[in-house]
Image 1 (cartoon, rainbow, N blue to C red):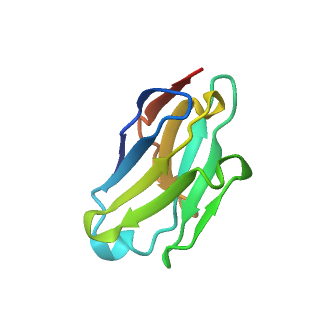
Image 2 (cartoon, helix red, strand yellow):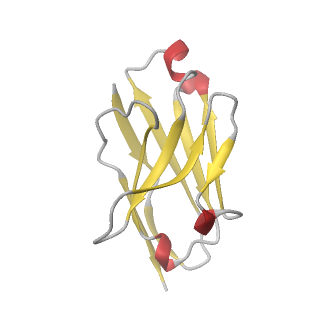
Amino acid sequence: VYLVESGGGLVQTGGSLRLSCLVSGSIFSTFRGLTMGWYRRAAGKQRELVASIDTDRRANYTDSVKGRFTISRDNSKKKVFLQMNSLQPEDTGVYYCNELIRPYNWGQGTQVTVSS
């Protein structure tokens, strides 16, 4: 299984981005049973979980992104998405996706840079 993140970029404060994560190599029945999360690693900081979505599509968010980020999933495509609105400079970092309970090897992530 490979995790392929995409959709990052450079945006101004207040802008939006939609990240996508493909869980390549996973079969449908396996993917739909996974609790997936989006993580962020800012420069000089540890990777943190910012959003997760379980098999019933229940979502959880870290306080700093509540009301701005929305996590979703498309089981048929084996993808997880992160819609990020009202982006702030503190959202800058490399974003990764992974399974919460039994993580796979980390992908390369996708860089998000928010300019002030």
